[in-house]
Length: 160
Image 1 (tube, rainbow, N blue to C red):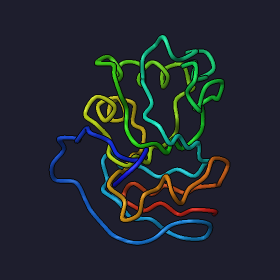
Image 2: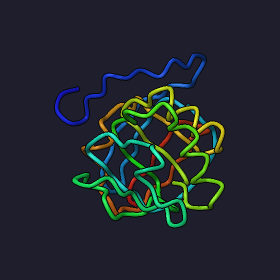
Image 3: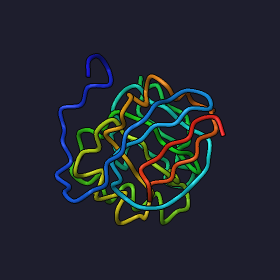
């Protein structure tokens, strides 16, 4: 993939389910299940990688604080986070877990390619997650759209 959706990281996860399909309002994406679960919520989309560092989050509200980032001032709480990948902080798994403990974590994750540190955070926090969709989710899902994530089957329904 080219442009902002490109991510250098690769999750080293084996034995995950893979499917295939499409996107946009009323369409379906299929991807690789990373963390099982089922959730329906509003999407919060970032075209750029997210750094899960405690310095970039208000742990009381789940608000992202990185200046200059498109998510600056937006809360991840209760949203399905759609993003290319995580970046730049080895303690990111702990930050995701801390967000979950405070009740302000995203309720689901759809990534272009979820890297290992963020994946560990999603696993220990029980956040349903998929990546490697058959179509780039950043091109077909927009912030505010209602999304149903069935990570048990590796399916994302858009505009439900």
